[in-house]
Image 1 (tube, rainbow, N blue to C red):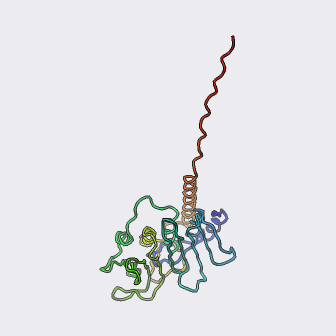
Image 2: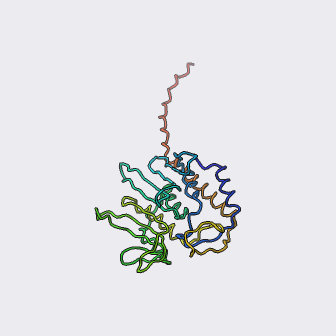
Image 3: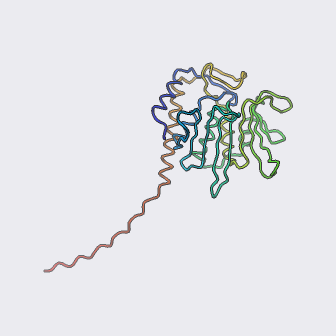
Length: 275
């Protein structure tokens, strides 16, 4: 079920009256609008399989391999869950994300699933270092304000395997975070380019747009009046959805088999005219 004009209009109706504020750093910007994720996936052909009257949203990819669940009534700290089923060529994997993770950051990951990069992306820690995050001796990355940390931890049962952990938290001591604000976790089978897409969106210095009095993740977040108008925020969302929709259509056309060309029928020789 693609994103309808009615659904885009509902997004516009809410955001057209909200005065946007540039909000940074991203890891403290708060959850934002979940439709940054769900509209993007629907535009790429993902379909809802959940009860339309439920608060829970479940979307499945066209090939049925990926399943994204958003559950704001979750009894755990994970409101988003992403699962990839195994194939003959790839392992299955699982990732989860906390309530206060910005939707735009998760959208950076889901965009990478629906439109994979044609170039080999950098490793997660290299991408963070390039964005100005600090890499310590334990190969963990910390944001410049030391309130977000990304690290790879070995599986105690299988040292050859390692999972990625991302946490935003209160300022701590001696390189450790205080009480957790939100988390993200990628199991040891998660492809590295998926993690890189996530941390690249997380460390992007560009501010996110939040409305006055909209929920953020921490009181130390910095907000300034945005040069963007409310209509420009709406237009940016609509343009992104249309771009994803066009990419999905182009990808489907490429996958369609080329119809076989029927062999040419040899010309039947005509009898000579009688004189």
